[in-house]
Image (tube, rainbow, N blue to C red):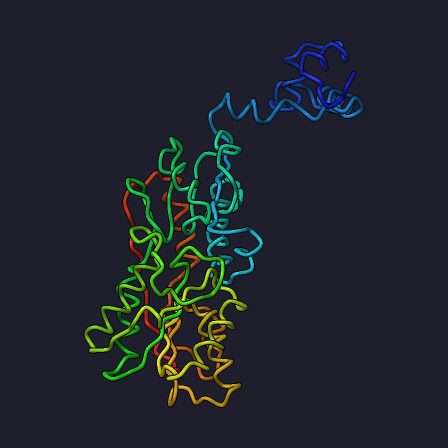
Length: 341
C-alpha cells in the first residue's frame, strides 16, 4: 500500500482497532491510557501514518489558529527591510501571545486561493505588488485588516501620512528652494526613473501618494514649485535603487538643494553619496527621510525624518484582526528634527 495515501480507515484496519481509537491517539489523548496511546502512535509511525489530514480538520472545524500576513512584495525583500521586519515582529509577538500562528505570504504571488481555506484571516501590510490580491481581499469572507493602505469597507491601521509628510517638508523647505522628491512606487515601472508624464498608480489607496500630497502641500505654502521631472519613482525602498536616484539627482544641473525622501533607507543612501562627493549637508543639501529607523538616528549628520512605531503597528494590526475591530485606526507619528535640515 502507498504510505502517502493511507486513510484513517486503512490504518485502523491494519492495526485491528477502531477509527475512533486512532483519532483519539492523535487528537484526544485523555480518551486512552498512556500505554495504549504510545502503542498506537508507535505502530502508526512504523507504517508511515502521521495523523488525520490537517486540512480536512481545519475545514471541518472552521478555524486553524493561523493568520496570513500578506506582504507588499517578495518575502526575501520584505524580511530584509528594517521597517517591514520590525512590523512582522510586532504581528508575530501579538499572535503568539494569543496562541496563534503566522503564515507569511508574498505580495507578488498569483492568488490567495491556495491558502484562503486554511487561515482564519488576513493582515495585509502595504499594497501588494500583484493587484489581483487586493481584489481577492476586498471580497474575502475571512477577516481582513490592511496596514499602510486602504481597502474600502475593511479596517486598517495607518498613520496620517499626508500630514506627516507635510510637517517634515514644511520644516525643510524655504522660499526659492530647488526641490526634488524621491518617491516609492508612484508609477508602473520596475526601474528607478523620473515620473514625467507617466500615469500615477494607486492614487486612492497608496501611502506614497498621501506622502506626495503632503510634500506638495508644504511646497505650495512655501511658494516652491516642484515639476514632475523633479519627482523620482523608486520601485522599492532598496539601496541599489536609491543609489541610482542619488547619482542622478546629485549630478543634475541645476542640482537640487533639498531632497524629500519617502523612506530612511533612500535618504541615507543619498546622504552617504552626497558626503562622498564633498557636498555639505545641510549647508548645500537638505535631506529628509521617513520611518525613523535606528540607522537614521545614528547617522552623522543625523537624519531629519518622520518616526512611526512599526512594532506597534504590527501589534495593533493583529489585535484588530483577532478582536474583529472594524474601525480605521490612525496611530501617532513624530517628526525627528535631526541635523540634515
